[in-house]
Amino acid sequence: MLRIALPNKGRLSQEARELFTDAGLEIRAAGPRALTASLGGEFQALFVRAQDIPEFVADGAADAGVTGFDLIQESGRAVDMLADLEFGRCRLAIAAKEDSGVVALEDIGAGMRVATVFPRITRQFFAERGAEVEVVPVSGAAEIAPHIGIADVIVDLVSTGSTLRVNGLREIATVLESTSRLISTPAVRADAVRARALDELVGALSSVLAARGKRYVMANVPRSRLEEVKRVVPGLNGPTVIDIMNGGEHVAVHSVVNAATIYRTIADLKALGAEGILVTRIERLMP
Ligand code: AMP
Image (cartoon, rainbow, N blue to C red; front, side, top):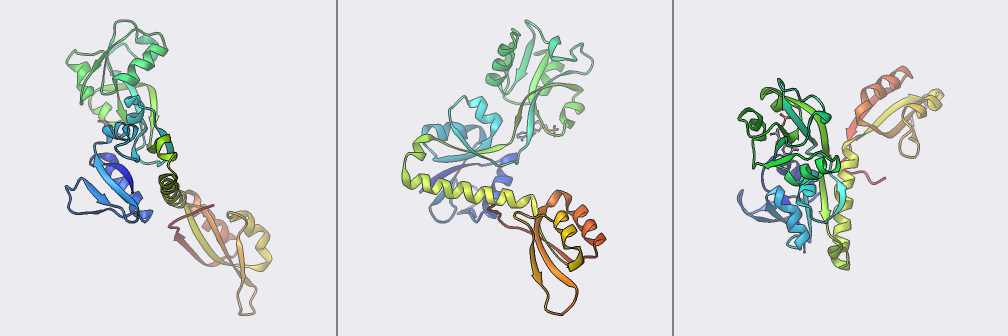
């Protein structure tokens, strides 16, 4: 059995569930408050707080885990990062009051107080820059700290930046960029049975992530324009070209393309005389 620690609530929890479900590891919990659940096969989920997951994995209470890079760094625990799961994207940033004189990193000097939920990362960041600040650890709502006089600046997570703006704070510098990661330890790797299960897990999650950014496009194109069509839809190893048995001048072309530029691809295919264009999602992609 491979025990995988997953976030029980918060921003990372829903997206972790979706990714696992898409990868065929559907969470079968006895109820909404169950602390464990079967993921099918040899996988079991343990639901814990995202900030506790590095600890659980490092101590061997779980064989693997999903949590944010920010929380992994803050834990200070040595774990292996096996895959970047791409969701939960945010940055840990330094911010100061709009009306303060602090507009750049250089304005933060000795004796200034920095409120944060991430004291370890913050201490290290300023120590590396030789700035002798006083770190004020808080357990949440750091953005209030400069307004009530307990800190001059804050180090906090930012996604869209709207929380900082609403609280009259200006973003000054980025300390760290974060996304969610799949983590484990060398001890799990050393066990052949669990190592194989871990490889299966990495493969399943990675193939879903790879597929999310791609689409499968099919179109009937004039045989005479094939060379140009190949340049529009190069695919993984070149497009698949299939004869259409109607004696016509068209051939069917199938290819994997980037989802982000699919509108351009469709327009380019149309310009080359393509007909019957179909675009579908891909469930998994193993290049
Ligand atoms: P935003 O207003 O979109 O910049 O979001 C900032 C607020 O959301 C802050 O209170 C952060 O603590 C929280 N936040 C943003 N992104 C994340 C994340 N990936 N994980 C946890 N908290 C986050």
